Amino acid sequence: MEDLIPSGSIIFLIAFVIFGAVSLRAGIKQVPQAQEWTVERFGKYTHTIRPGLNLIIPFIDKVSFRLSLRETVLDIPPQEVISYDNATITADGVAFYQIVDPAKAAYEVRDMERALSNLSLTNLRTVIGSMSLDDVLSKRDDINERLLRVIDEASNPWGIKVNRVEIKDLSPPADLVEAMGRQMKAEREKRADILTAEGSKQSAILRAEGQKQAAILEAEGRREAAFRDAEAREREAAAEAEATRSVSDAIASGDIHAVNYFVAQKYIEAIGSLASAPNQRVILFPIEASSVIGSLGGIAELAKSTFGMDAGGGANGRDRSVDSGSVPPTPRG
Image (cartoon, rainbow, N blue to C red; front, side, top):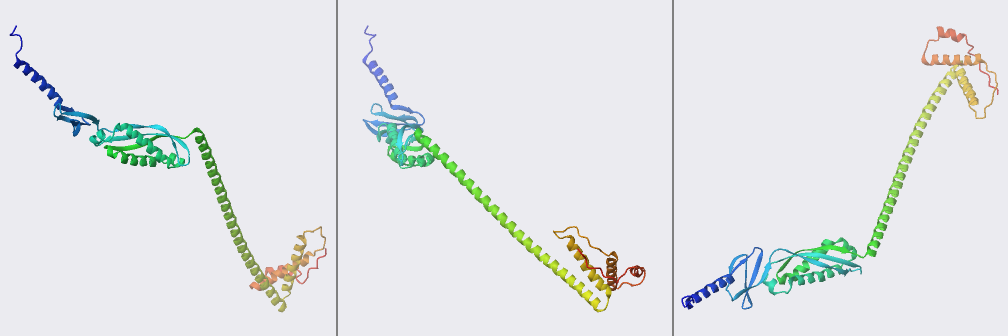
């Protein structure tokens, strides 16, 4: 029986082996990737161990906090916020932060996520409370930027880096949403009326410009027509004067044919005036055809003498058959 009882040396050896195994296990720490652990010695922070295999003093050093260095998402709970113009809005958001200094994150703040959440809530109320409702609804980027700047600066002593802050939802009350809808409709109707009025104005201006241009062109046309009419009357008067001068010269030279031409022309013009009178009626008066034919013969003789045509020949024979000396009688109505 005494041989089966282990000796003291064996017991010590076994105890030493067990102690060594426990000490080895307590002194060797394997830190996962993207984590850092803080180490305390007799309750005081000494250093931070990084990912990989690390050695600490067993039973003297201990791991106090295991912190993740990955970016973490923090929900900002919804809350009612009063804007600068006293409109109540329900707002919530989300923040993305990352631990950059594990020692500060472990010892500078207690319950880090709760502290960061409350910090985000208070600054959200501050930022939205300084803006009007229209700015709050239309300038989310400005709200996000201001929240990020304020929260990051406030959380910097905690060893935290806030990367982004985003507003998830902004919900005004139902009656306010309805009022905003009516306001937007009124604004759109106002813009539509303004555009319609502007279109009518431009249309009236264009019509006036068109009428102005038409009047100018019409006046220019009348001026051109008057100028041409005056020129035509001038030429007609010149021709009439030339004809009268020619007849006067012929009368002065004793040519009876010129007298016949002048009398026949006035005779025919008088008949035309009677025929074109507005109060014309049936007019009976004798016309001596031979006298008119004689006047026409006088016209032919005057043309021959004017253009130097030969007075003899067949034409003279025909003229002799006409009584060129007869004068048409005065018409009787």
